[in-house]
Length: 191
Ligand code: 16G
Image 1 (cartoon, rainbow, N blue to C red):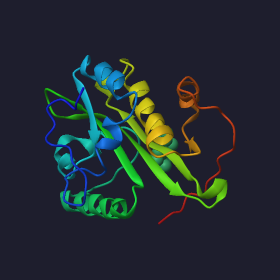
Image 2 (cartoon, rainbow, N blue to C red):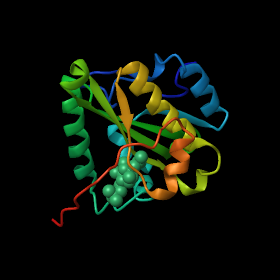
Image 3 (cartoon, rainbow, N blue to C red):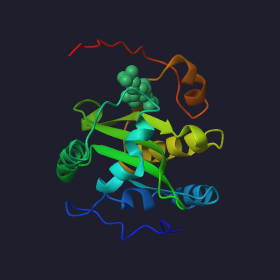
C-alpha cells in the first residue's frame, strides 16, 4: 500500500520532507503498518517543512517544555536538520497524520549516531515520542514505536536502539521490545 493522499514523496534537498520517504515505504513491515494506520484514519510520513502549521510543536508540548518557537525558528531548525541529512541521514522524524484533519497526532524521532565501535556501526536513539492526548488509548504509541524500531533495524542497520524515559513509561517500552538495562545519568545545564 502506498502512502494515502500524500503528494509525491521524494527525497533530496529540494523535497519538502526531512528524510527519504522510501526508508518507510521499503520496510518489509510497511504494508502491515500502513494497514493498521489507515484503519484508524492515519498515515505515516516524514516531518515536512510545512508542519509548523499542522500541530507538530503543539504535540511536542504534551511531552515537555517547547518554548516560544516562531515559524522562522522552526524552519531554520528543520533546514539545519535537512542539511545534515543531505550528507547522511541522522534526523529521522516520523509523524502520524490524521487523514481527515491533516493534523499531526503522533510523532517520534530516530536519531542516528555514527560510531567507530562495533565495526563502525550506527547507534539509534528513540527520541521525542508523543501521542496527542485525544488520540491515546488506541495503540498509536505502539505503532509509532514499531516504525522507529523497524527503521533502526532494517533501514539504517543500527547495532542498537536505546531511549530514556520517565519511570511511568518503563512498562510501556518493556512491552515494546526494549530491555531495561544500562543506567542513564545526566547533567542539566541552566542556560
Ligand atoms: C523523554 C523522551 C526524550 C525527550 C525527553 C524530554 C522518549 C523515548 N523519551 O525522555 O526523547 O527528549 O523526554 O524531556 O520519547 P526533558 O525536557 O525533561 O529533557
